[in-house]
Each structure stands twice: as C-alpha cells, then as structure tokens.
Length: 470
Image (tube, rainbow, N blue to C red; front, side, top):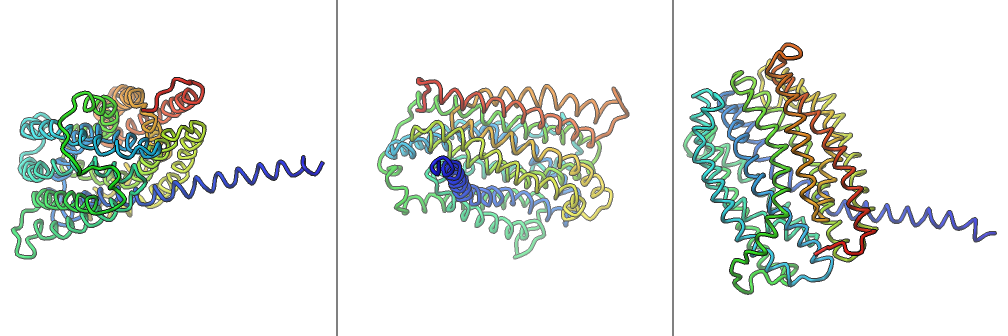
C-alpha cells in the first residue's frame, strides 16, 4: 500500500526534475543566443537612433535601405541556417570529424549567394524608382547600401562559423564577438554620421561604412577564436582543403533554402509594406521603420528560443532519443510564449516611450505607438511560430514551414493589409495602421499552422522506424 502511495510522488519528482533540466538546458542556450541576436540587431537600432538625432530624412533613407537589404540577405543567407541542425546532430551523435567537411561546403555555398546579393544591389536605383521613393531619400539610401554591399561577404561567411559554435552548444563566444561588433559600429556611426573624431560627416550613408568595417572585424575575430580554441579542434576545420562537393552543397541548399524563404516571407512582408507606404512621405516611412526596429528587438526572444530549439532537438535526434526531442520541442514553445507575454505587456503599456527614443516628432511618435499597439498582439503568435520552426529545423523539416509562411503572409496577411491600408475597398484607407493589421493576421495564422505541423512531425519521428536523421 505504501508503494502505491509513493508512486505518484515519485512520478511528480521525476517530472519536476525533467522540467528543471530542460529549463537549465534552454537557459544555457537561449540567454547567450538572445544577447548575440540582440547585439547583431543593435547595429540597426543604433543607426536608427543616431540618424533620428541627425534628421528625419537620413533616418528614412537608412530605413529604406534596411527594408531593401535585409529581407534579401536573410532570404538567401537563411539557407545557411540549416548548418546548425547538421552540426547539432553530428555533435549529438559524437561524429565531430564530419563537422569540418560540412562547414567547408557551406563556405563554398556562400560564394554564389554573395554574388546574387551583389547583383541585386546593383539594381537598387530601378527598385527605388519603382516604389516611387523620393529623390532626396534615394541619394542617401544608395550611399548606405554601398557600405552594406561591402560588408555582405563577411556576413555570409560568419554564419557557418556561428552555426558551428551554436551547434556544439557553445553560443557564448559568438555573443561576445557580436557585442564587440555593435560597440565598434556605434563608435564608427558616431564618427561618420556627425563628422566626429576627424572623420567626414556623411549622415545616413556613414552607417553603411561603419557596418562594413564592423562586419569584417567580427568575422576575423571569430575565425581567430575558433582556430585557437581547443573546443573546436575535433571538427578538423582547418586541417585540409576541401574542393566543392556539389552533392553536399545541393543538400545544404535544398534543406536550407526553405528556411531562408520563411524568413524572407515575413521580413519581406514587413519591409515590402514599408516600401508600399513610402509614397505617403518620409514621416510615414520613419514611423513604420521605428515600429519595425522595436518589434525586431522583441522578436529576438522567440527567434532565440527557436534557434536554441533547433540545437536542442538536433542534439537529441542525433543521439536517437525521439521522445525527448518531441518533449523538448513543445517545452521550447511554452518557454517562448511565456517570455513573449512580457513583450506583449511592454508594447501595450510603453509603446509610445519606445517610439520616442527614435524620434522627437510628436506625429511620428503617435503613428509609431499605434503600430506598436497592433504589434503587441503578434508577440504570442511569433513565440509559437518561430520556436516551432526552429524545432522543425532540428528535424530538417523545412519545406512545409515555407509553404505555411507563404500562405499565411503573402496570400492572407498582405491582401488584408493592402486592402485596409491603401485602398477604400472595405473602409477608408488606414495607411500604415491598416497594413499592420494585415501583418498581424498573417502572424496568427502562421502560428496555428506551424503548431499542427510540429505535432505531426514529432509524432512521425517516434512512430516511424524508417525516420532518417542524417
């Protein structure tokens, strides 16, 4: 009888220990990844803050450049994000010697991706003309994008090394380097925007030069650290030359492209919305850009949990523990939604204060804060969507999430946003406010579909004896 009474207590203790272990494991991954992502994005925030202090025209121009560059970069560069799942699975299966050859093929993949971005940026004048961007904004935007183009190769080459460090559960070095990068970028921005430290006064265009210098510096720092650190030696990254292996490069791109496409679909929706709104004037551009900067910061939480989920599930799948991988996947969603609830409250109650950091113009603050109120309702859904996608990445299930994002954002959210924001089809055009309502609808639908996809994939991995990990 006593044994029967003790059993529930024992089960509760086991469950408690399991939860405690998952919390500690995720904390060790999420915290450094979060600060790494935050530091990487802080370069954009600092540019927005400093150009806002300089003048609204330069702030709008830099924002326009970001809307043109980052969706395309992440759309193509996101193809390299799958490297984290490969590394995590090899590391979980104790097959470290296979990591180095994989990374070298990822570097080969970087070359055509860099070329594609460079070609795209060469047509920036035609793109700005197409969207009817004011001439005075175009001039500064082109100068800013020139700097981003110079820094592009460093960004691409940095990603496989970042995936390497995170995949072997060592995200902290990347965090430290990213913090160093943003510090250097802030100092250079202060010099190039305002003409301090004897540097030329370039306004918004100076942010591009700062970005290029800090990006190459970050890449060099990470290469040096990995080369000398003992924790990376078993991967044999620097031991011998590897010629391009078309089969392996194709495998990386085939699995990675849908990840990039997912990011492009959401980033493209937000940035494309800004470009569609650009003919409404520099104040609307600035307000939209401010709301994007703030929500990108809040977005770092679910993104970081998603990246951690990809590592955690990849490690567990590599070790062959499919039941634990499913548990960890949904535990990650609980963590993300819990953290996202704080973002929700912050945007509801302090949205106008956040907007005021970027610009002192009361009309811009008012519009930005109204957009942030809508963005608050995206937070919980983003927690489900991007954490779920991260977990699915660990399973190398990348194609279905891409279809989900295209459906939710481009065939659902964008038409709603365009109709409400720029036409009188249903109600008088609401401008940026209507566009953000549509984006919110897209985020909510995506989260629902991703959740059901994760449930299906994790169950299949447990029940299907032929489920392939590698």
